[in-house]
Image 1 (spheres, helix red, strand yellow):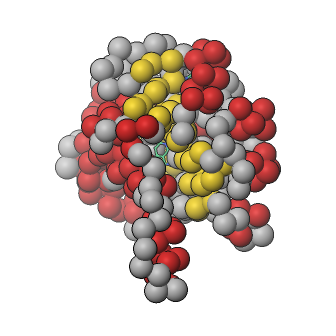
Image 2 (cartoon, protein in one colour):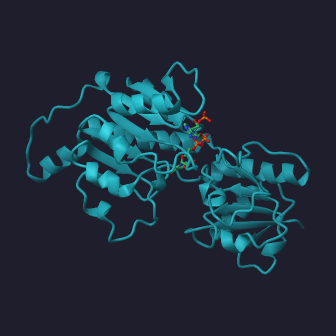
Image 3 (cartoon, rainbow, N blue to C red):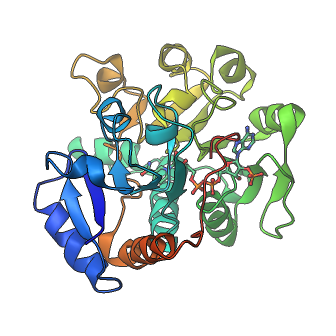
Amino acid sequence: MKKVLFYQKDTPKHQIKLWNIKLKKWYKDFNLVDLDDPRASEAPIALLWKAPMEKISKFNNLEVIISLGQGVDHIINDINFNENISVYRIVDPYMAKSMSHWVILSVLNYIRDYEGYRKQQINKIYKSRGHLDFKKIKIGVYGIGEIGKVVAKDLNTLGFDVLGWSRAKKKFDFLKSYNNKDGFNFMIKKCDIHVCLLPLTRDTKKIFNSDIFSKMKRGVCFINAGRGEHIVEKDLISFCGNKIKLAILDVFGVEPLPKNHPFWNNKNIVIWPHVSAETNIETSAKQVAEAIKLIHSGKIPENKIDLKLGY
Ligand code: NDP
């Protein structure tokens, strides 16, 4: 039986059994092997999430990696990654919708001052704090891909004016599309809420830094569910409380966020532990199984990563 290597960081051991059951519902002709299994190096296909790439790079039989999440930076940005390996990823509408729910939660938290009312309740204060006029709010979504376009559309349906940044210009009726450096700078200056949903590539690493934060309006909300390394964390801290009224972060340069990290005690920062859109085995197993089946029959599955672009 053909072997498929499986590794998913920070998940219980029984997860491999669950994936096995869900995948076999759609395709049976393979055996999942754990990274600790002595036969792991025989597998031509690997299903990975944040795997130790140094170890995996020594497996000479490996031809294909399928990311168990929508991001692939954990595979291809690793210095040990072998560029002769083809990389595919999950693209799951369930994840995009989950992300949309989380972004909406974060946006509404900011404009309706949810945190402020929670504090008032502690002191039994019963009065309006006012709120921002949603018709005047411009939301910039950076990254209009499989996730960003769903988020942008849903925000627009709620009545927000949405601006979207991508490499290529888009023709969507639910957002104003911008690209290149000028488009980026325009959105940075104009928007009241900034939402980062970019992939982490050579071009997008540290894209949110002092220079960019200094161009933002005073009192904005900054939301990051892309990757921690999209921002220069120390720069974000120095702009929190002045330019940035509220930063809502789901991803960090080092995860789990270290206990001594200054983000924890910053009253302008809300921390989420990388849960805005988790992989759902139920909804993604079918496409992973079909990808394995196609590879076994010499065909090319969907959602192949362009290694030159990095996403
Ligand atoms: P996609 O690859 O579908 O979309 C990426 C988007 O970013 C595209 O619109 C692309 O432009 C744009 N982009 C890429 N590089 C540039 C650049 N240099 N300049 C301008 N725009 C650029 O990715 P997904 O939507 O599926 O996912 C995005 C990211 O979200 C993932 O890579 C991951 O980091 C993060 N994520 C986070 C999760 C979480 O739980 N926190 C869960 C899932 C994903 P174009 O359309 O022109 O190609």
